[in-house]
Length: 534
Ligand code: GLN
Image 1 (cartoon, rainbow, N blue to C red):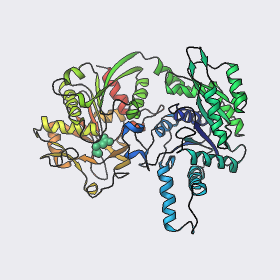
Image 2: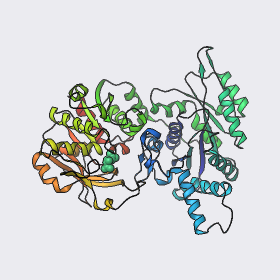
Image 3: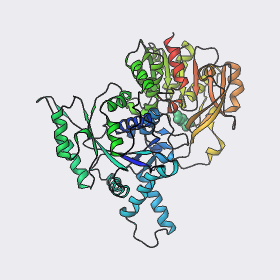
């Protein structure tokens, strides 16, 4: 077997150029040519993981099957490649320093002074190669977070420099993503920022092999030639990445630019058969040519930043394409919803999704949204806190427990219908201590959820501390809200459903993490379908 090859994706000029989408697209194209690939993300921040970060900082926290709280780019990798990532696919400066300091305390460095070079860089290189060594991938793609020139990124860039040297020709590639801005006053595309950014890489000892240029206008031959000349790359290695109407078009655009062929040549790997990407293209075609539109409301408290609900939004894209419609997603700030305006705010919606979340802010608006959906027979989809709010609402207004709440919001409520599990009560640390990762759930066959999944046992990912309080289950079921899905090992309620309703489903897990282009999540598909058919 050939040694694992490594591709590094770095970014220059500005952040938010879409390194994650480019990395995922490269992965997709190589996978489509028969290569076994994986993608990892190195994040330069000092948090051990993004689990403790407010979504306003870096957007959503994505959860892997093995329960790692990771950067949202891992979501893109899974949605594009349809293969699971894991804890090892996301490394942060926090993780690196934590393991180096642990080793130092154990005396592993035998009295040496512990330094960024070689100790931190050795740990980074070890982590980069871990996936390649353990899982026998043909190609490991590593996305380096941040922008070259950032102080935080330096140890990572230095590690890439060392690895490029150690792994040798044909085994390692650096792909650098930059921006070519368009100046409308002079009608020109400017390459200078790209030249400068490549200079910064060169100062750090790295000659990039391929340049991908983000641009809003097509790049002509002269511009490509100029970049090639100034940045020491051949012209076939200057790749245009023009703004696309959907991220899912990027692999197709990259294939048109022959990025995959250039990569394989430089890695000395056979081209194999050119991928047709039929299923993928079919999906993009449906996404871009919807037959109808359906208006759905997303009620949450982080709605000002679209990235906070990334996976939910992408799941709607997958579900819409299959239903040949466009989901017009209206984001509603739950803090702004009150008894006086709830009808007016939710009136035009064909379906309501109440989002996950933590803490008290905006929770009453979510509970009111659940009440509105229940009373007006509007399809309701509650995810995690969204399920808990539906349970609280039902307890207050149907069972008559006026003070019912989750003990997360009201510690001394008379009716704790959502409560902490015993094992969570002793935990004081915040990081990585929730119920995290994949758990099994057995679905009742006479339910809408079963109709959606069409199977009895499902596995979905969790990220929460609080649970449905089983002490109240009988009362709920008698009144018409049933446990449609149960965890077979712990008996915890994972899904609730209102029997006498068009579609009222709350799930304790996060179905949005498992939705991919090729395998859209069945609950999103069925929710959109129901909303559409009204
Ligand atoms: N805050 C709730 C809990 O911890 C719900 C979490 C979520 O929505 N992800 O149980």
